[in-house]
Length: 336
Image 1 (cartoon, helix red, strand yellow):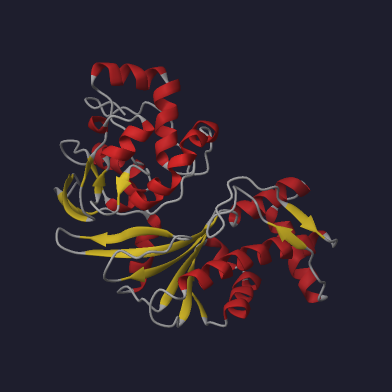
Image 2 (image 1 turned 30 degrees about the vertical axis):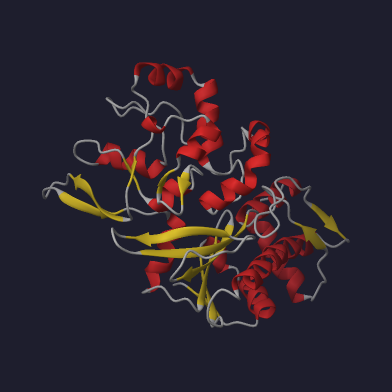
């Protein structure tokens, strides 16, 4: 966006956007180093390669950079700039880290990562803790201080009380993620993501996270393949369950395989035959199987797991939650 006017210089770009995947392949030799610095796997789902694409392809972005008026950063930073008095340029840890330009160890922008992606650090908002004096939000009743900024995944656990290291917080949305709080030292978990879930000036809590890229998006993929509305397909799945039809196996490569496999491109397909309702069950089961693999990765990092807390739109699906309980052997509690 434009530093002086606050005007957006590009549309909002979804995490699912992979427009610069081919460019990003040139950094494959540095994937290990990038992982060590960020806690993240090198993927076009994160912001850095998208920023690079905007710099290379959008005239408005290039012009703003040339005049010294360019700011690039997470959507949360843009919203804070537009909503708060004085237009501050600040980035919280949860959102800054997902640019893949932010260092876990220093909790700030990494000169090494900026160099790899060819991005000038001067165009980025200032990195600050989760709890910080972000500024004043004007309201009809007077200004209100904004003191916490975070991202959706990092906010989820706090909706249910203090962080509980025995619980895995599972959000079932477009993608699905399973996250576990870890206290103490920065954890080492090569097949999972590591992030800061909360920080102040003197304290930091970490999250280990497993991701499943194809959750709600996998059901959307199937609806598109079948040429049928999703509510109808889900009703047919219930009918298949009622007659105890055995589903085929669904290889779920929608948006690529996330943790712990990290395969950016995989053909989605069914193995075996069945009715359309059975194929819906197979897609639901694939989400549960992929989450279970991630639960097994999370289990060694802390005390024994005591349960799953499940949130998000897909948590309304009885069969998916039952699959998770059967596979994990843990109690599954759904948010209200």
